[in-house]
Image: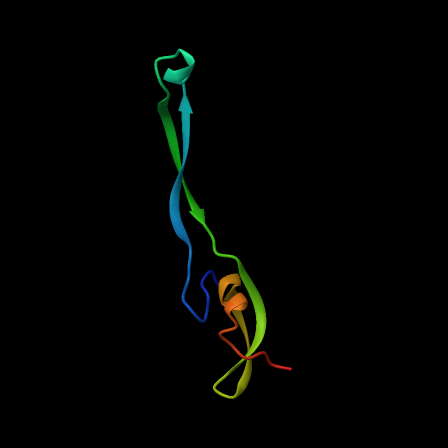
Length: 76
């Protein structure tokens, strides 16, 4: 599956899963510390739709934001 929107080009972004341990200072502890982190991906909400591109119907992946905006013409 393609992981980017064919209209706006929105694609996956990288981030981290952060694990923290320790009691918070306001609860009487010494503060939370970062123990470890793991890389992860944030994937866009892509939907496969049939749209018209240059006068011909094409199957394309479109993000939910572009679907809400209505930046395309649906093929019948």
